[in-house]
Amino acid sequence: MRLSRLSRLLLRLALAAGLAVIYVPLAVVLLNSVNADRTFGWPPSGLTLRWWGAAWASSGVRDALWTSVRAGLGATAIALVLGTMAAFAVQRYRFFGRETVSLVIILPIALPGIVTGIALNNAFRTVLEPFGVGLGLFTVVVGHATFCVVTVYNNVLARLRRTGASLEEASADLGAGPFTTFRLVTFPMMRSALLAGGLLAFALSFDEIIVTTFTAGAGVRTLPIWIFENLFRPNQAPVVNVVAAALIVASVVPIYLAQRLSSDVGAH
Image (cartoon, rainbow, N blue to C red; front, top):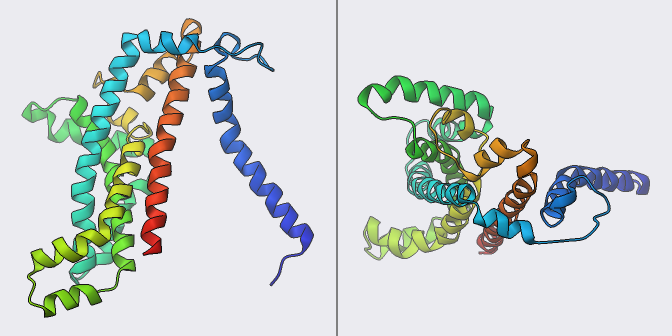
């Protein structure tokens, strides 16, 4: 059924309002990062970048950035390995209950982040702490990887399901073994999905929804945790805006590249 002109206009207005709710706060953060002297001033009295230099000069910011990058790289590496293995196994082997396997892997992304973080924190303390494994950067990586694995898994599985089995069957008919078929046929087809999933996982690893609760008491300060700690300190407000703005801009880049790669995947 075709929508009337008024209905289409209302839908566009609703979409515009929804996008404004999402992007206006981000735009304010970016604006305040170059007008940090008047955080609540509007319109800005003048733009300045001097707080960007002050943010980089802060050892706390540099340490938090290095911690975030290490945690992100570690979580992404784990996600690429486990996510790809799970997706490949679920797609290739027709074992009983593969839909259940998919559900179990995807489920953590849909659970409330705070509750999941508390659950993981309790499980970690109960299971691993008796063996001398304490909270630290390792737990940050594990917390991030919990969600990042799902991102890679979905990306790779979607690519495998869009790929016909005819090339793999032809490779097998020509006498190629399973490893050769994977190296020459399957892997090239899923390479873009892997790279896109890795980029998305790295961007996702800067999201503290689950990790702030999971790593409570770990003493590890990532960039988002640094922002939370300094958000309501008046003397830190300009630097917090700068760090938040940098985090927004830095996250857009891998997400955009992943989106382009995913588009290329769909075009094959």
